[in-house]
Figure 1: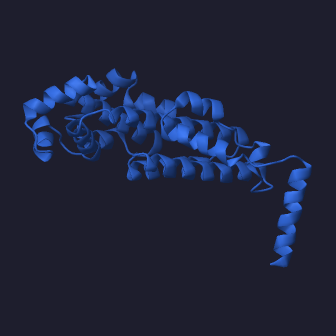
Figure 2: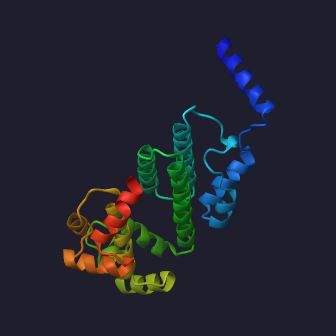
Length: 245
């Protein structure tokens, strides 16, 4: 143990000599709070690039050092976002996907860019969640139900029955508070999930169409293109390799 304490003492001494200090706690906490609150402008101002001399050295291998810091960063952000209401299942799955991407990224520039993408992704998720917090309890229950049942047939009647509300009243309330009909919201969320599956999985477009309960593959292609500007095949060809290689 004494040898370990000696090493620690010498390391701290060298850091002081080189004026090489870790990011102070208050600044780090303010950054995570900005992500947690969906404050994109503050996040952009406070985002410290991976590899900064104030982040410490976790490995003598430059790329491995950045990868370790990335994993710490995504773990911290995930927990801060869960604390402020982001679905744990969603947050942890998003974290897993980003760490898998980092594991496949072999350049410092790639990991640094991935760190920016990950941070802004979580921040935008939280910004949308903050907006949702202004909704009534009935609409929040509807949003939660839709999110957890996207892979099942969804109708206003079924949702209304699940949350014990009159279907007509639910339709009017949902449109009033969100600005879109229930069916349009479901469609957008399914397309968003389809985008993620096309980017981050090997499932075929047909499998994705069936999984998300589109009436037919041709209908899925039509809706997907109207929402994204691409067919599913074009979208995968454009974004899949970019995100994993």
